[in-house]
Length: 145
Image (cartoon, rainbow, N blue to C red; front, side, top):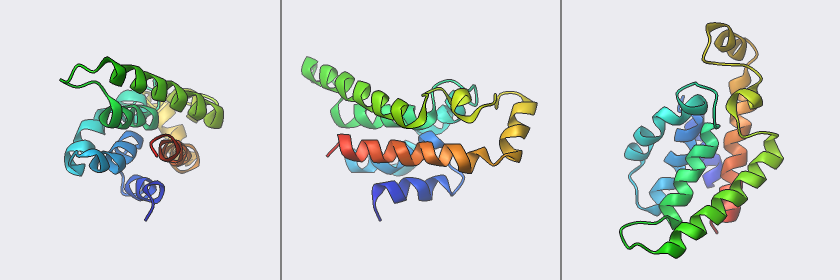
């Protein structure tokens, strides 16, 4: 199973967009999947359903940091490389999805009862969020080769 298929499989098991991305890729870079899923939980729905940055994006940023980020080694090149890859990811995600903001992508505010109802009635989880997870996984596959 490819990591793209794996991310979609995790998403279909009721994990959020951030969990689907981070939970798929983190084990490849040394982090236990259960821990990765727990870490990413609060990032779903644009950070706790607040509709801000898409969870697939924040999940991808964490993956990029896990692979290339600055740790205790204090390697300043690691920080620069991470920022460069994050910016390239952002550019590609924006190009594919039109926004990196959850409420703009889904067209409603899921932090309100009305918005959440609209989201559910219009099957936006499958129509929009699933596509964001797929796109984020595809971009990561390209960037992390």
